[in-house]
Amino acid sequence: MQITGNGKVPPAKLPREYERCFAAENERPCATKKRFDRRSDLLLARECWEFGEFWSAYVPCGAAQLNAVQLSLEQIDVIRRLAEMNAQHLTLVTSVKGLIEAHREGKIASLIGVEGGHSLGNSLGVLRTFYGLGARYLTLTHACDTSWAVCSVGETNNTQDSTPGLSEFGKILFLIIFQAVVRELNRLGMLVDLSHVSTRTMRAALQTTRAPVIFSHSAARALCNSNRNVPDDVLRNLAKNGGVAMVPFYTYFITCNSTATIKDVIAHINHIRKVAGIDHVGIGAGFDGINFTTTGLEDVSRYPQLLATLLEDPTWTEDDIKKLAGLNLLRVFAKVEQVRDEWHRAAVLPVEKISPPDHSACVYGAS
Ligand SMILES: [Zn+2]
Image 1 (spheres, helix red, strand yellow):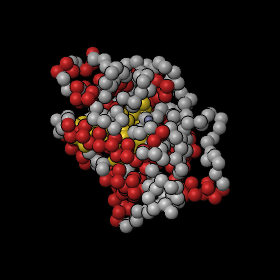
Image 2: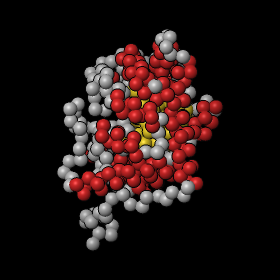
Image 3: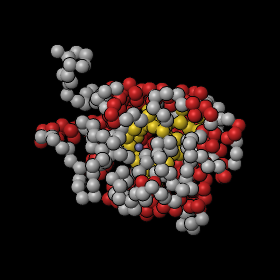
Image 4: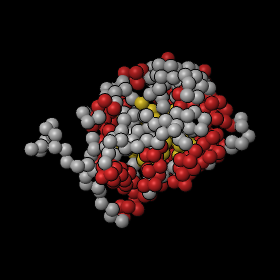
């Protein structure tokens, strides 16, 4: 079972290119096929061992505090319609049970992830609604801060991020809201995704969460010093947390450059395996959200090549490959569901509010 951490759909419209994925011309051997225009080709994905994918409901940071919530709902609508339209290939799933059933039926299990806390509009009611619509992970930030979490942008090797411009009281409030969001994700049974967040936010989330977390598309910072990647100390804490770091194929996260090879991606996988352990590494990909792809991993047809190359290494067993390809993520998802069920039995209540009332003139109820 191959489950990918992060796949993109175009903004808020039903993508015609996905309809075209089923044309007869697509029926060629996947091992020889190269695609640069439709990297998440569904038929190819199914032929080439992809059995699960988180589709990212992503809206640009420019929409934060504007219509980010509406655009996010429209993205979720696109993903749901994509699955309905292509029901012979895809099935929308929201649970481990659903993932396993989809795998048995030979379909690509399609999961929804919301990529960026700005999509919530500072409302846990919106988060709960996203969950109700099927979303099963929240990336705490995209490339912009929220009023409760700091993103990786601006963080350099030598500087820790901070919460700029906040008073001491503001910092406490910031932390309280942050913890409330993480705990609500735990309570709902939604995965906490730490790709895109600052190092400090990664550490704070690992201290707060009661369930395993994921990095849906982040590599090892020790090999490519990008603030989008995960430092070794965080990888070690990730192992204690029981989570998984899923390696992307975007060259700038692999070599910090515009070119990378399949061997470079494998170096990241091996590094995470060495530091965190075989139970804590997965595949993040990032198709179609990336403009530079690794040579040899240009599209979904290349997954078999990646796994076959790993198997040539005698230190990789078939069981290791299974964990990398999907079992690790399944384990994390199952544990997240277990925490949700335990909290449900303990009658843990939802968090009602996460931000002070908005008194701006543009909101209903403003005086
Ligand atoms: Zn991303």
